[in-house]
Length: 86
Image (cartoon, rainbow, N blue to C red):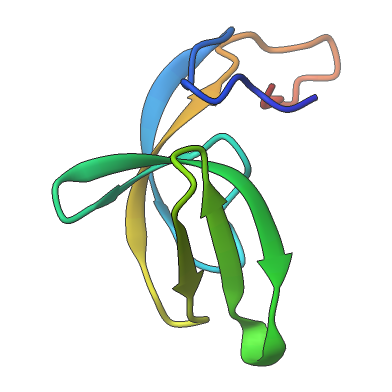
């Protein structure tokens, strides 16, 4: 299930460092002091990803690119003891 484009939804916001391999749909990445919500992604050659933002803009994130993102995660722990993201 994909979170709403405005980033609202269940869970708490945490700051995470993301690269092309760890970025997720719904992440709110900070680029040049502006926040962009990742709506969709496409894999590219060499480990890069093309990120499509809710604003309609896109960014090619190289394998070595590192950004900060806000991500909603569940503060709950389930019976199996593992932490689960929404």
